[in-house]
Length: 231
Length: 253
Image (tube, rainbow over all chains, first blue to last red; front, side, top):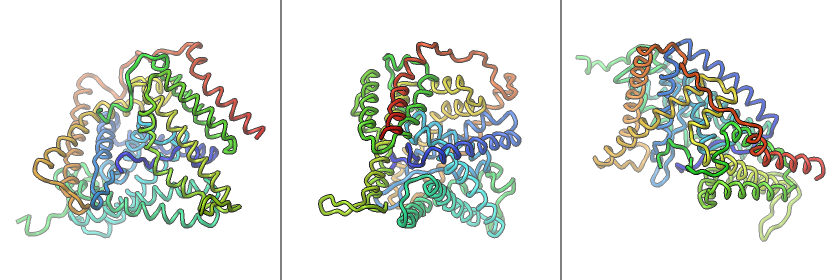
């Protein structure tokens, strides 16, 4: 599965809708640059560059799902949990553009669609879920892990729902089977999302244990230590 | 092949020598022409494929390589194969299968356009090094901040990818061979470690840059070379033919 792409190719979604989403993506990316620069000012270029390099490497890592099936990370929720939604979405956008221009993965005319789904929707949906979940769950290793797992699952499914919406607006008229198609796409992505969630939760809790200040979603606070370990 | 180097195949063909900004514009124009062509104009797609095959030959890119790399789109081919059974319309019989005629057209449309789109993008990726793509985008007035982030990302992706590979070898050397998702803990933790290392490296790079007077923009005044009228004409000839065919078919078919 490692060489397969989930990026939308040429003309799956028609011209006007692609153009509308390209505009939306451009506005969103502009907002991301402004917001990320507000936090990082002149550190933006080196830090965002390194974070993007990390997302790039993370996407190359194949993880097993079951037996011979393996998948690779999409990275939206990972980026959002560690870097915050603005910088996270920016990094994933850069990865998508690199893949379209240097790896022929995803059409240039569908860049806006892919950026909106995988960078913008995935990062913001994931980050929202983490913030909500951390209000309810205890701020422990397991609490953070569960929050990140839920966030990854939601971000992958939300990104695929973004595609379903775009397909509904500007794809083929499939009439009554649209429901089945949507169910098949969303169902597959629930499975992908579970894999993504386990790996992302493991990675984020590992970072939180050593450098909690680097996990954006924790907002500078440490994880609560279990009582017996603090003695 | 290092996965970070893209799909570039070094060479010295006329297509390799074209300026990158010209090639990027040509790719976008050609892809738009493909997308705008009505699906019933089957011959038009044949002409596009022939044009691309000619360009690949001119660039000395082996067709076998192109076909292998085209597998990237295969998940969408599943969608193309599903269309004949999903789209409603007049049924036709092929062998023992009952499929709908608009569905067949929809599947053909997706198959043909996605494949041609990937081929056109492969032509750019195969003939243009990464640095040149960035220079071309800069020439096309792409926001400088995004290009700088991209340049940094590509430069350091070599390092992070090497770190991930090294940690994978270290895991394998210790007999870690996860077959199922719940066994992938070490893999996830190693990803966390790579993140910490990347972020700390980013901070060190920034400190080194600010020690040398960096204030948020790179002091580079060396712009990428402009392209002459001859280059533009040569590169846009093929997209122009494609656009002509797309218009012709849209009006007369």
